[in-house]
Image (cartoon, rainbow, N blue to C red; front, side):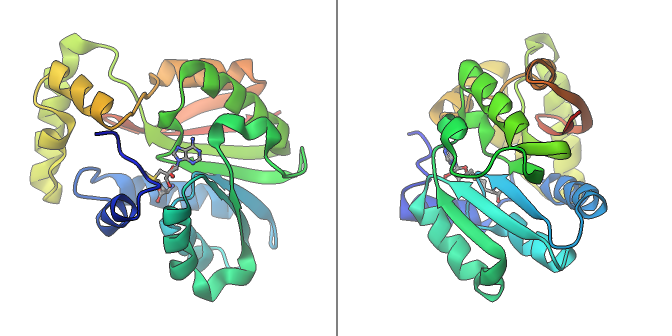
Length: 235
Ligand SMILES: C[S@@+](CC[C@H](N)C(=O)[O-])C[C@H]1O[C@@H](n2cnc3c(N)ncnc32)[C@H](O)[C@@H]1O
């Protein structure tokens, strides 16, 4: 069954534990927030694409006191969890219900965002939808603006899947997580888990290519198995 974030029970289950199958999420989020804290000016507004239940915003509002966020998502169930979680920060958050596959029509002024982030959301878009999304992200960013993508990436070297599995078992032992079984014990099982969740991640090389084609300079800063943090800027 595909993961339906518009379903209230799925939303609550996802929100309850985001780490057991993705143990490097806290570290990668910490790095993302560190980069943002360095980049954004006091009072700046940033955009979060697929902000979900507001877990990232809670960390962000605590860490960067003056920042404001425009959160974009298509799931009222996830946005309702965010509303509850971010009640103390409601004057700093604007929520827009919108499909990420239609970012060119996002009702936000062009070339104004000093930063745009997206965490674990864009891997639901196809390659051609990502091309459109990256062009829209470029157009939304102010010159010099920063785009940070933290997302699932595709394993495109199947012969090395056993190395991924060894890496996850090593991590699971250190961090008491369950990533090795969650990702699928062999490559076919891995592809099936992606298919079952409607996840269609792109390889890191493809992300970089599409970001650069859209007019941004782009690098991959941190990679942990199938989770990567990219930084891009509108030059
Ligand atoms: C795994 S959650 C991540 C939430 C949040 N970014 C976080 O990391 O805590 C993915 C979110 O992306 C949203 N999403 C997925 N596809 C979307 C689409 N096509 N348009 C808008 N939102 C989408 C889902 O509704 C969900 O809230």
